[in-house]
Image (cartoon, rainbow, N blue to C red; front, side):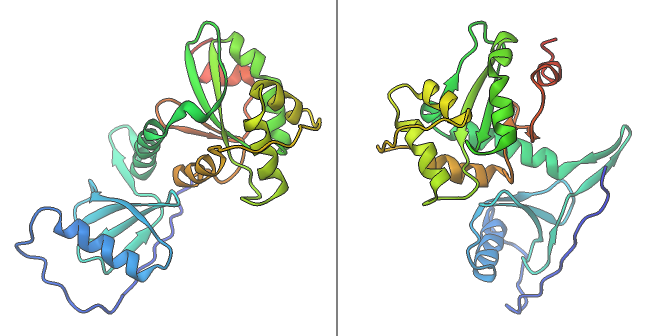
Length: 243
């Protein structure tokens, strides 16, 4: 376990705040307001008390977790660790996992390109880039994953971002009459006919940013845990307890 954390304290200069006798939710609202004003572009998704007394856990729109004092004046970035009888637990990663599970559950999965298993035992959500070599390697093993009972749901994450050739390629795959065949062709490096339609590619790309995708493939499990990078089909099935 990497024990290094980055700790940064910011004094915003908003003046002292009286925190006594505040109503429920006022502290959270104040922290959200101060962070939003102090950090341009930051969107606060949630603020709640952490299990470490005196610190509030802030989830942001880019998947980062920030800890703030109740007056919102001091911030800490990095992972919060807790010593338990079983060893050291990563409190921050546990919070990320739960937040990721909730965000994935809230997102409309009707727009995924799915490769379902006939005898489904598990579902993985894969944020993928058609042009990513390791994404293509993983796609070659989708039939094997299906044989293990694992349904693969693809979410778009063209790493080059919107208005790029890779992004438009994913849109063409999504808009194809046969999405699976188009995905197979694109992953194999074959030409896919240009197509356009109303599609969820941008929404899926933005969802990837919110759940903390930084590279592809990124495999999100049903419990919210994320496997970063390519994992051989057999090892993934073993990790899911299917073998």
